Image (cartoon, rainbow, N blue to C red; front, side, top):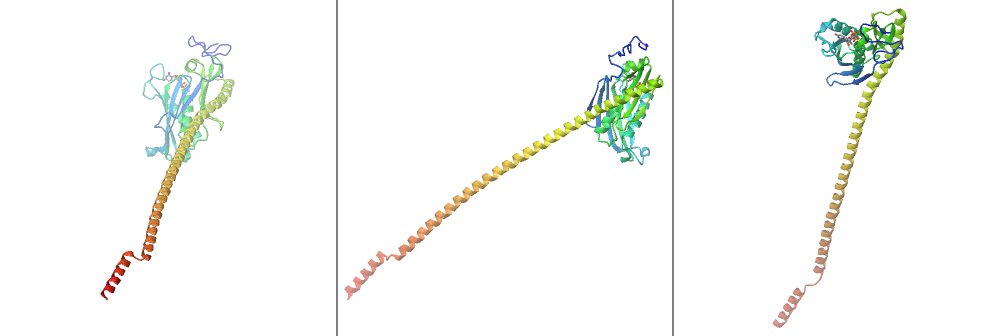
Length: 325
Ligand code: UDP
């Protein structure tokens, strides 16, 4: 039966939870990658009713300089809850809880990154909880890892987070806000799924050794499942980009081919008209030459013929001379 702090039945004898899930069911999880234009990488996670935005800036030079690490990058993580993210308005001033979560999320992300590649630099990870419904630190680190991957920061592995809980001595997966507040215990972890390393483990409440083991047996496969969703989200984004780029390249190649075809057509047109002009001018020259030749021939012919006028004049002169005699 339920662990009663209110009238809510957290889990029935048949193992059905207050929202209809079984003990090893996760809430619905979905991601949007690259949601912020100004960030180097970003991701929005919807995990049940949690909505959490993660933004990554860097690697970039770290100021103030005294905080720089000479041999590696500093992962500066800031987890914040919006005032409107919870039922009772939260004070905008960072509380002890937010400072603690910021620190431990930064430390849990670090083993997934090749920080030695960026000495004296900082990688800023900003996490904004827009709507909270239990398990925000696990959802936050899951989104942050995706934002880091989106920023192109070299990574050994992604980081997936999930919490188990103790509801009336029954170990269950992925507590929501009601279960978190009314259950007997909460055990969040963050996990590197390929390296099979736990990078964050907290425990709040009561777990006996068997329950502890059972919780880990539920959490590790759950983190691997979440990792697959992360992979799909990032792959989807980059396959979309690849598709867009190949489409753009194909369009550019088509345009280029069209231009080349048009310029070839223009060249052919030019060549044809030039050939026509050449033909015309050749014909004109030939005609001119022919006419000139004809004229020359006529002139030559004329020069060979004795002139009748001259002959007449000569005979008249002869007659005149004869008369004189
Ligand atoms: N919560 C709240 N007000 C606060 C802090 C937390 O209502 O100021 C709620 C919120 O829904 C959160 C839940 O309490 O998810 C459990 O908080 P916890 O500190 O256990 O961290 P989480 O489970 O979110 O990682």
